[in-house]
Length: 371
Image 1 (tube, one colour):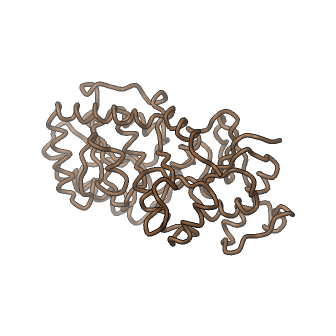
Image 2: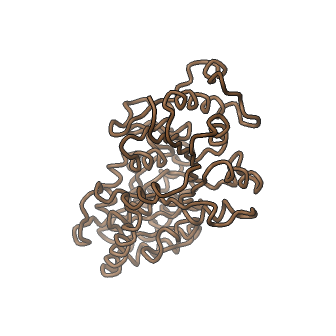
Image 3: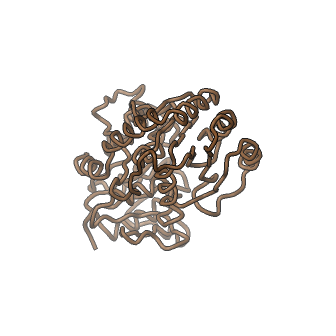
């Protein structure tokens, strides 16, 4: 068995419906015919439209280690065990190229073991907080050993900061959305008077600011309602955290419904119905896929002014400080009470999202360097 591109997921990403996170969903969308995805084992049946092989740890890592290979110095035991299982799969496949997502230490291990296979590391998070990429020297070394791509210009700037690298040394491969697979666009007049938050229900995502903003705005907006879709983690078995429990009380008081975890398809349907979507992330989003999906689904978007969100949203949404719930509330009120403004913001969002269509993303990926 040989040939083709192999994409390696981070060890905790699951490639199955109801289990997949943002990286796994992106990898599934981008996969070309003949591509193989390698990742950890799944609870349910893996996605059937892309070939998937599980890098299963069946025992002590030494027994899974390809005999011709030796452990690279400095790689942690946990990722080392996963990388060894991936290496065993690659030994069988002998791919024409390997794309590793979001794990520099795994990319370095695979590069040492397979020096002749072209490779690319795609980063979805801030490398300054990653093992084997935290220091400027480590990022320079990494960029010499494998091709490096980031999902936004903001993230690339973080990567090259304080290094001798230039922007041309690190590619930008933005996340994407398959416009042809989205629910049909609806006119503003056909949308629910719904203000929606969708994503992980954690403080970093600004969901508590959303509740506080709705508490101020909803009493002024007869006929409107607000809803939160999401949980602490991806999947229906997400735990009830202290943050979630406290938020439920505040949400109930504010009149904000909490729908819990829903599948990705259900989230897109909700975005296609909602008049307004808010993505007030306090965390500096490395990209901001929720914002892109909301624009593509035709909702009027309010987003945080941090991280890569201004880059992704441009002039196609209202940007706010996520630590100012009063400002977020004012933005919600403005959009809810001004149909023309709402329609204009939504139309600009749809046009903006076209720049991130799947076909363009696949073309950028095919043209991007591996080494």
